[in-house]
Length: 327
Image (tube, rainbow, N blue to C red):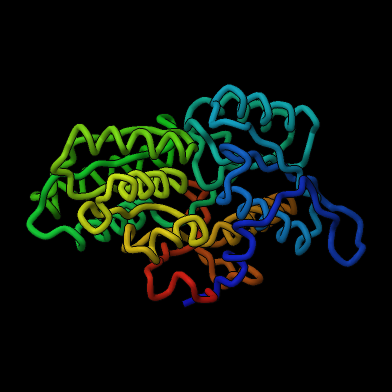
């Protein structure tokens, strides 16, 4: 297993907006990163990865994002960075289609446009960077929940923004996988809480009231999972209603250690940001990405030229046995 020591420390680190290039050399590129929303640990960790990539590959990183998971606000920020004529702009999209116009405008102005973590549709996107295959993420989430529920029963999903590309695809794939692999698990509700832990707690409480026989919940993003866990804990249902989902180890650790959550699924968001910078600097230097690429600090990274996608790797599973270890 690849070491993930940087994940734990940086998930709680405060963000800064840019980084000076390494070794005192002149800046080569300016790269913007627009997350779905600022102020949550996951995107703070991705930001740290961008900063690390900036130091390694001599790029200045500009970090700006909306304070809520607003499609319109994100599009406005992306457009403003394109107007500044940065060399490249990367975005974790709140919508797969809303930023297509910005991608086209970026291409017209000679600005490389990348989507990372959550993708943007269309041919104008220069590069896509994914955490793991969507199937691997969706199947891992369902398998983790199913392992905790004997004999089947009702389950629910709590997701983030209702237009988020990656989250909606994972929900769709989980539905298909449930039907094919776990027919005794009945999905009774899919709800959306944005990127807000408190709202996820509120929505999960409503689901628990509506379905008193509920057996399990999957949180589809890093704010839904702790919100769902908190609602289950407040209802006195720890150990009775299984909770799993996407989350970072720092945010979910307390719920794992007290038994409310048996497992959580993630990847290294710092590596994801770092890989995005590497990919963009390769394109900006007019280098051709290969099917297999040796990326400094990450090892071999696959690239699909058809979809213009770099793939970070496989998801990780955090449990009580390993969540406090140095990854």
